[in-house]
Length: 539
Image 1 (spheres, rainbow, N blue to C red):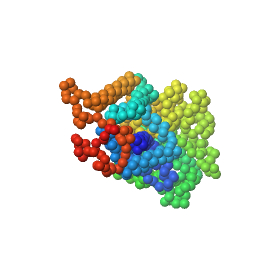
Image 2: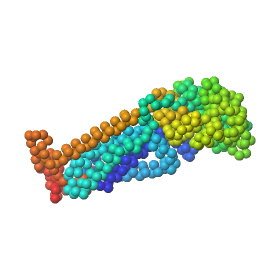
Image 3: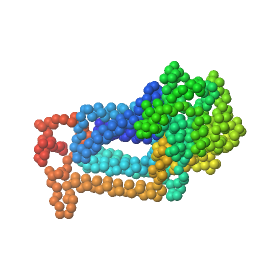
Image 4: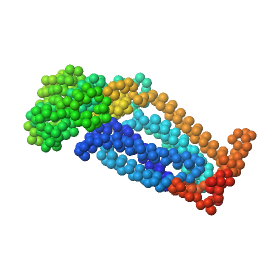
């Protein structure tokens, strides 16, 4: 009983872990670069972990299917000692992996909860179907148990799980369950560092690819060189996206802002993309694009703004303050603002930096002030905020609607999976920042969209049909165990026939031993109908 319970527990833990890691795919890039920063070398850990999760789930699922099949025929379960070790190792791995990921990457549980707003209807139907399958062995052993207490216990446990599943939809919420005709326009797309799956991030090639793919805006990160030139770089060091280790081997861990612009221009910003292939997409590039990517350099803010200005795209950027001792530590906002005002129309700029916001607004009121904090409407309007730039985990249809009523638009970042884009669309987001402009630009409708009436009908039909099937299965086993004829005039089954009734203790049903466990032929008489099998004798 304990061993079978551990098998059930391991199955559900491995299922949760696999589901968790599949839904975390939107943020694999963050996971990979976290490991790069920690370990100092590149390796596709996320794909390895996905393969491991799929393998252990498949293994445990096959064991569980075998167990259910055996129990459905009233047979004992036999597991080799190696399978027992496999179950134990899988259980420990799932617990440890989820504990570590929860500590280092706790926000992904929010992603999992968001995913249920899309997958819950399908998961509900699958869970109900599983309960229908399980009803066969449950009914079989219910009618074969001698002790009333155990009969009541197993039936109560099963029915409590079943009725809980039936009521789950009452607590389900999804912005994609909405009245017909109320779905708004799809969110516009802002290329996160350009199109980083098609070209090296934060390069001119990447931004031009995002424009070609249908991006409405471009997002980047701005740092200030030691001699006062704003340029594009996300990290605090240059070692991830340039060949700084080759050009300046003694400065690989030096802050990005401590390099002069001539020094930065000496670096290659594209070769790493082809060698590490962070998104697994480099091999799909044409030879022309590969050569172009190989020759990319670190662009200045002015170069970036010229691309946006020519294409009429909006821009949004994070601005990083130089470290203490830097010549422009105090004036970096003014230096950046001067470049912006001389290279692009102010109305195209979503001004995200919060430092000196009043001064910036006074200098040019056409800059679209953007906040990364979810503040009250009063606070936002006092700071002249017209756009919110929030992490997708803050997604809330009610909040987005509230801000929209005050003419404050909402941009969510970083959304690269179609299912997350569908949620943002249904929730009413105005735009999303994405690594996959070329993918989301092809999404014409949310992946999941239902009216409340359609969802209620699906829910009721699922529950009613499953209830009929489960009741039929219990009636069948009740009828069979009593040897009653199935059709009028048909012969009654005999005591030793295929439906002969035998009772067994619950401990016998769940007992687990090795595959080749020997049977003591001296103490276990053979069955008259199957001489090679021992007979289970009712005491």
